[in-house]
Image 1 (cartoon, rainbow, N blue to C red):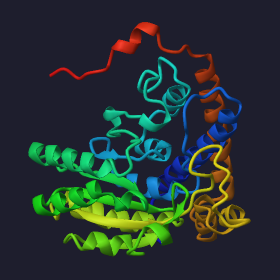
Image 2 (image 1 turned 90 degrees about the vertical axis):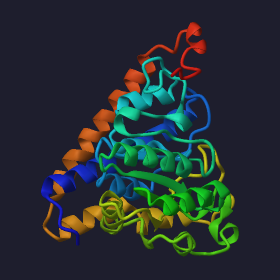
Image 3 (image 1 turned 180 degrees about the vertical axis):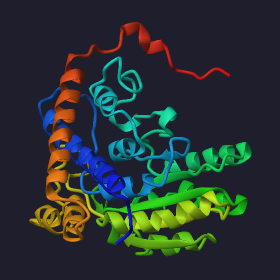
Image 4 (image 1 turned 60 degrees about the horizontal axis):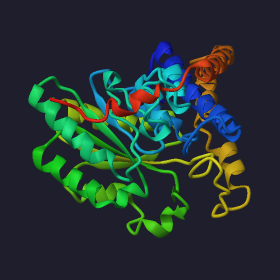
Length: 323
């Protein structure tokens, strides 16, 4: 097992637990009708976001997907500001104008959730060009799903990153489904990592339900990028505990599939078992974090519900960026 300090282990668990409870609570609140727009929940994939972002600093960048809440929290975005944004409030991270699929916080290096399938890698490549020109040793990571891995924009981004030897890491989260279509049907290669390797970069696969496996694989790729070795790709096999969007009946999934995955492939459960069995953390330590996270989520929902929506006049602000 990867050697991490006690504080690092607690921090990782806190981030994963925050993502889980944030998403579980959103699932309930959305069904009450108080949140506008579509929402795509990240629960089940927490180890990927946290294991990758554990190697990134505030000055590093990430580009996300439509399923971006977990990436935001893992990168350090304010949880209450996120909740307000999803509720469409004026003091949300994007002043209530982005909503679930467009949360961004550039100050934290979060370039934004992205409703365009495969839209993250080109943004990451652009950011990597900028950071290399600035010469500050920063890294950019893009997150893409198994469906997005088929997009031509992703191929172009990987090729350009190799040609220019950019400090970029292409993270692929294979949760088994592109919206409602099984990856076994939609991804002809059956091996996203080897397809990425075809562009001339190192690529590997790891268990996305095991935080330590993610941490080790991501660490190798990010270290290589930071040291000037160029881009890499990592494919993580994972699962999602909810449908493509809140309200998705999931008729395309096998009976009891989600229940089985919650029992056998829950990255938080796996983390707890590993650190307790290895005498690295006590159950009481983790239970205390559980309680603190639930209080944070309760508070964030209460503040979001009490906050005001944007003023009507704000509709014409923040439309264009002027240079």
